[in-house]
Image 1: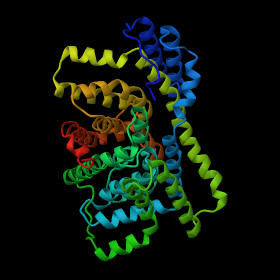
Image 2 (image 1 turned 60 degrees about the horizontal axis):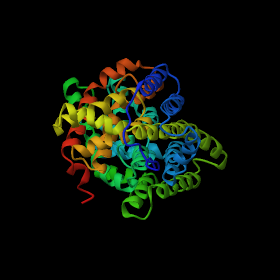
Image 3 (image 1 turned 135 degrees about the horizontal axis):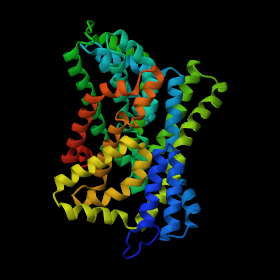
Image 4 (image 1 turned 135 degrees about the vertical axis):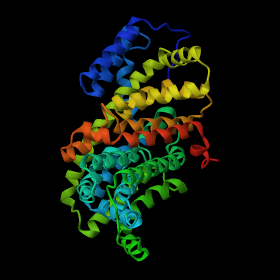
Length: 436
């Protein structure tokens, strides 16, 4: 998608480029909507550098979002919304609690597992934080967790929304770099689960230190079977999505469509929703999708302009001129991604940085799929790190707890996620074994 034009043989980046770039960063820092900032930055670069005709902007805006794979984004968002409205999300949490609730840190661990279940359906971390947070934070406080820590636990667990397939982030990065979303979903399964288990383990360790929760009810196989049977329709949804994708029956877009239809039919049969609820569900999902698509549309002309200016090549050359050590270059790349995730949302980061960093990843021996996994996982850390920390703001809005207090309690989870990111970066088999 980004290679329909021919780059020039050699381009020197001058003040026109840097002034446009600084202006775009300033606009973002001033809280101008991201899509507006990116769009103005692209226009300024095209106009000042004349590297591409300005007339290409309109064509690129519409051509960029005219992609079959992007249809999956609003469909997964709608599936998550229907899941919450029908009460099926509560059933998934019941299964999670019946599975791990008998452990000493039972409900805290169940909360993280519930986030993982929700991630298997919605593909969105913010949606997971809002849905699971409403159901669990008050109960976590009753179990003995301090409220800021309970919020941090939900925020960290909800990071699995973009890390466990199906994930909107993997759909977008696959679209930008020309990698099959189905292939990325297969490669991301183990890394996503690693993040989820790292968050669970961190909660267990924090409980050992502070003694927040001490569950006394043991695991009951009979109760687990009864809960799973009661939640059979809720469990059917992730089974349909992931089973259909991994078996090759559905593409991710088709799986999203089937998931929407499945959840709506279940809701109608159970009487949890009626046809009068459809406008509200569509409106709610359209609002979320309306935030994502303008960013995608505006990011693509900017990415094309950066590619035409040979920014990726210049970036790689500047780094390799300092060091050719693959380990150090990998750490620099991860550092850039984590810092970017701290200040900007995942979608624009993917659209802008993935074409720039991919040549560097190839230079140090990463293949495209391995790079996609490392990039998305690294950006996922940004959801619980200030100043942006989207999940921190979501749970803060739900509970009225200070973002800074939640961020302070999220520190151990940031460290745990960073450890997993490093493992994924330096042990490619964790991402690629399923493909072999």
